[in-house]
Length: 297
Image (cartoon, rainbow, N blue to C red; front, side, top):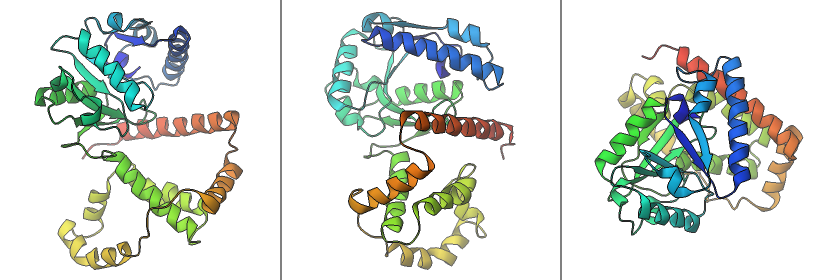
């Protein structure tokens, strides 16, 4: 949908016809809804965007004439390596080979490929239509031009690409996310705060400002600049950081406690979970619209 919103022809490929059929139908419904609600991206209408998207079952047919290939198969290293090995045999020297993986390292994914200079990770954030960040993570042998082209392409379709300068397990987003999850879990496990209040600290506290500015700019603004913040608060930060505990196991009594609290709010059956995801996506849609309307300083 994002690539079509930028005016690009898109071909979906899967080994199951039903997957392709269902995807095209879901895209049609979603684009129609987005157009009706005034949230469709791009300058083309829904029908024109839909006309750019087709599907097939043959990988060679899918990549013919492509300038960018975005792999989105399940998060399984061997499966992804198999797909990239296939692609490596049939692509030319111009197309970019990109993976949507959230944590598999490029050096693992693209090892031994003849076209490794054309390979990188372009990790989107779920749901990408409303959350524009894309992490660009190169293989050590990725050509700088490959990163530059992908960066320009993501900007053209309205995304916010960031350059991860070298590969690191978890990239950047998940390392930050896991740091938050880890301390959140410890705070609940140690009886400092309830699961529901913990989520409130983020949704009605940190998350409010992090929707517009990051942690480093927050530091900069919360004092008379960054140097002032570090001078004023570094000793307190180090004192608190020394009290952080070990990596949680995410099991046992704590997982039961957290699960019970989450299920009270959102029962863990497909219907309730789907309804809550729709609510989440609507919130993100409205937030994305607000961010577009806000003047950029």
